[in-house]
Figure 1 (cartoon, rainbow, N blue to C red):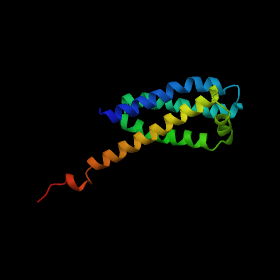
Figure 2: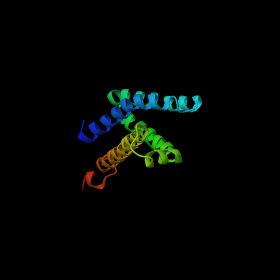
Figure 3: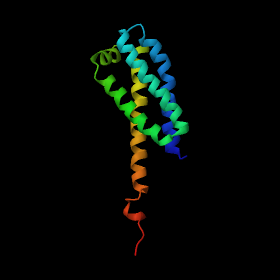
Figure 4: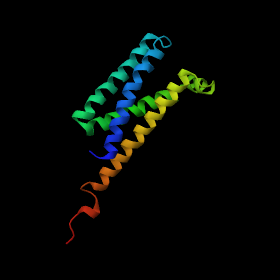
Length: 130
């Protein structure tokens, strides 16, 4: 396993671990149906964490989808911007760290995909000459 793959695995595991205090923090704030949706997303991150050890490639793609969905949900909420602009509170730190992990995961998986395409069978430099 290369450094890029190890980085992706580490970020997925960190995001999953970070989800525990996040769920604790949002439980009293969110309406129950929305909290359950967020909790299901965290369970998918747990599944993704397990997949990093069993089926790493599948885990990377699932991690990409989850990170894009989570980042999209975060960015689409004006209340999140208000929390961050309000100062350095626990909620603001949660939003910033979570969004940072999501962005890092997106970038690492995209780098993994690009690196894989360069080594793939369609790469002109890898075809035999002659």
